[in-house]
Length: 161
Image (tube, rainbow, N blue to C red; front, side, top):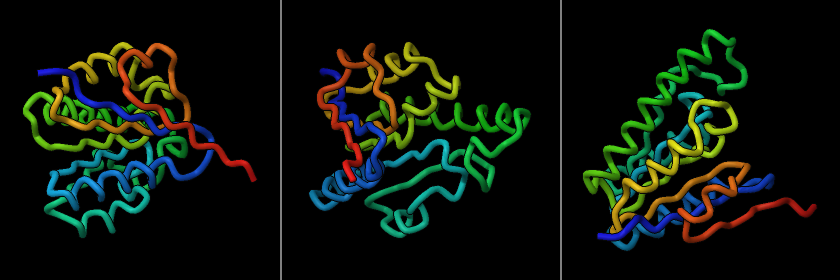
């Protein structure tokens, strides 16, 4: 049993989520089970309703309760939403430790570090929870140097024009 294969899609450009979802669809078309957990996008999330139509091959989850994204919330609402987000992280850990799927996409998980909801150390621990049979994909704007030893591939998506 080795560590999970980890791919990161990061950068200031648009398309990080789309790239990860594309990989998920590719995996599902090959018979793999796929779970997507979205963070920081509110309970609506981009494309999540469409992705839910792809069940049971692809299952999408969002643990946030607010209709708006995290930045638009008051500090008190952010504190409450952070607890919901932590539930999503605990679910991700459970999926990884129980072989709950073949491909796990944690959309905007790197942004949780920027917001102080998750530490780099906590994300490292989560990455170590996966086994060699799991493909794990992370998205977010900023890639942290401390994570490089824990990932296999990093794709930087930037807008040139």
